[in-house]
Length: 256
Image (cartoon, rainbow, N blue to C red):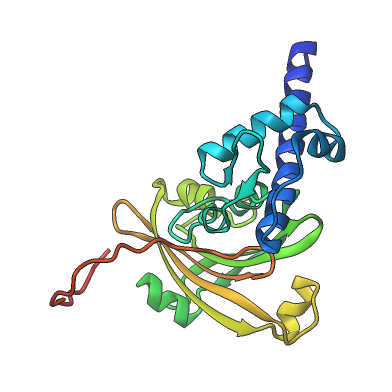
């Protein structure tokens, strides 16, 4: 690695570190309904220059997350902070957690080949028992488990289930030759069971957000099914809805 490349990587790591640290103050301020500390105090507590803090705050101001006025404390807009994680946006979870100011990581807990279970097969419109890869993944935020995913991907004839990596989107593209274009995500909630609690490293019985997801390619092929568990204390999702005048709605069947 050249000196220039090493300096570039070091600079990127430092920028991510400062952003994550400032975002933690922003997140805490939004939860407490308080203002941010001044730039000088933030720089001291984050361990960076005042310019680095100012650059991060300028970026957050452009996103509407903070409001800065000359001679006044920097305010955090809690609604805009909620909208930084939108239910309709698709992001790799590791990226999503970083955007919230967490130190994030992902690990593949298990990869195996199994017959596609009937319930998932019905959603994917394939035969039950079709060869499938099952991948269990776990994301951490500041070291604590924040999300679990149980992915099921149908396997084409001759495909290897052992080298799928930690991205369901990349895996589906490699296996089927087309990218995931849409996700049908159905949210719900459940109480953490004994088996899932072990993976979540939490006590059984706590409530978690669940997402039941079907990934669909541009051709209409249903590429994967996923069951995800999310800790609502770490990540909460918002959506923006448009208010329209009352009207008569008709229903239609959508086919992918």
